[in-house]
Length: 76
Image (cartoon, rainbow, N blue to C red; front, top):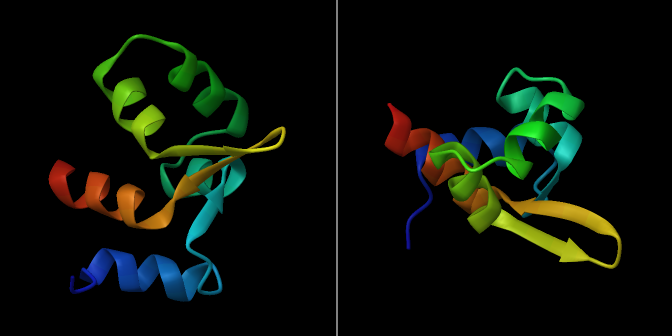
């Protein structure tokens, strides 16, 4: 599958990693990390979409870059 323009921009911006931290996603969405945590714990449409992008490794929470890019592209 071909990378979208948004995905390429995010890969360049965050060093090519396929996973993003909560802080990085908060930065992309122009929210504070604490505000993003509150959003994720809610029952809104955005919370459902973000939770589907979420990946837990141990105690850490990461988000799939391709899924976040797709979420941004669909919102436009």
